[in-house]
Image 1: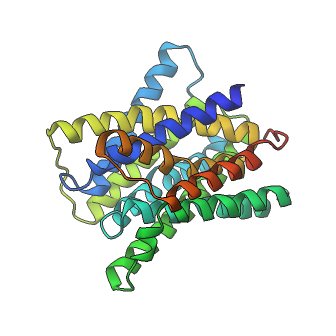
Image 2: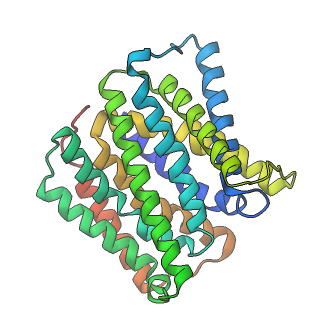
Image 3: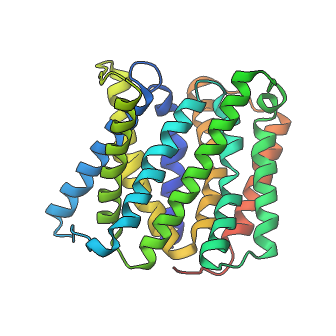
Length: 293
């Protein structure tokens, strides 16, 4: 029941962040927005840990991989995917990001010796096929021009960074580091790395007072980062990185459901078939026996 609650929370929160991210593009440089997002999330987690009497300090001998987690999962990953969003549609990003299931499975096997069951391979194929069908019109319209290819490259690099960040997080969880403090420290490093990237690239540290930017930043920081990544790491501890990554297949489906209600998104036979495939794959992936970290 706890696994279901964590999984559902993760899917619903990150599925709804798709719309929020669109308000972050433009007014402020991507690197600066990412820095703001994770700085706020880190402060929120530190304050929660302080007032809840949770452990805050982490052992110095184990701190190196905490920094790695922050650099890959809370900085590079987001900077690159925000860059991709300037060149390709969110649907294509969703298709690319579904590959994180493959990356996580490969790296979890490589670094931790985790087995990959035939059932999960089938689930992965169904999930990627399903999400590709949902966004088939956008996949079909993908041109071979330089900007589109650059966007796809950015997206794949983002998936790679996110997956390596997941492996660092899994390594930290296996050393029994507490989730809240782990994320608080790692997000602080992610915010700092993003700020340094902004300085290195000569980005101005502007801030937009437009309501869309401020509200989306608050939502992405608290719900999309502090809470969602807590759910993600808690899930990884219980069911592993590969199966947790399967939630990426459902994020865009939630986003499209929201779009149906508020933006009159029109479903097609292909998109309905894609959702069915994704749900079948989801069932196959999550009904295996849990394998705690």
